[in-house]
Image (cartoon, helix red, strand yellow):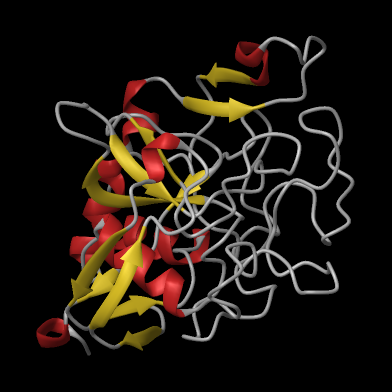
Length: 260
C-alpha cells in the first residue's frame, strides 16, 4: 500500500510565520509519533483499491468534479473553474482524458469520503491538520525560512507550483505545467515528498468552529508568487467534504500500533 516514513513525536510551533489571518496565531503543540505515506496516493494505488473493492467515487455518482481551466476572462475568479460532469479520478481532464501516462500522478477528483474509504482499505487513516503540519515542519530544510520547502536558496524548485503570472501562463520553469508525478522533487528532511505543492491534501480537521468545511494542506500546482502564496507548511485552505477538484489529493497515516 505504499512506503511510509517514521515521524517521531515531539513539539513544534503550529501556524508559525502566518501570512493570512486563518493561519495564526502561532501555538506550541505536542504530537505523538506516527507513520506517514512518503508521497500522495497515486492513480495506480487508487486503481488497485477500486479493482479489489468495486468502489465508485462521489464524483462518478453525483455528476462530476471541479476542473481548473484556462480562462478567456482571467479577471473573473469563477471563470478559472468549471463543474465538469465527466471529470473523475479516472478521467482527470474531463471528456476524452484517461490515465495513460498518469499512473504515478497523485489521484485527484476525490471527496473526503473517497479518501477515507481508501485509507480504511489500506489500513490507515487521514492525518489531522496538526499531524500533517508537524510532519511538514520537521521536513523543512531551513526552519527559519517558511519558503524553504518550495525552493532552494539559489531559487531552483523544490516543489511543483505555478511559475509565471497566475492564471495567465504557467511557464513550467520548475519542470512541470499542471500535475507532476509523485516524487519528482527532493524529499524533505523526514523523507516525505511533495508536502508542498503538486496537490492540496485532505486532512480530518474542520476548518474552524461551526465551519462546514474540511482543512486541506500543502498548496498545489496552482499556488504562485502572484496569487495565493500557500506553498508554506502553515498555509491552509478548506473544501466541502462532499466536493472534489483537480488540485486536491491525499496521503494516509498509520498509527504505530497499526503500522506494517
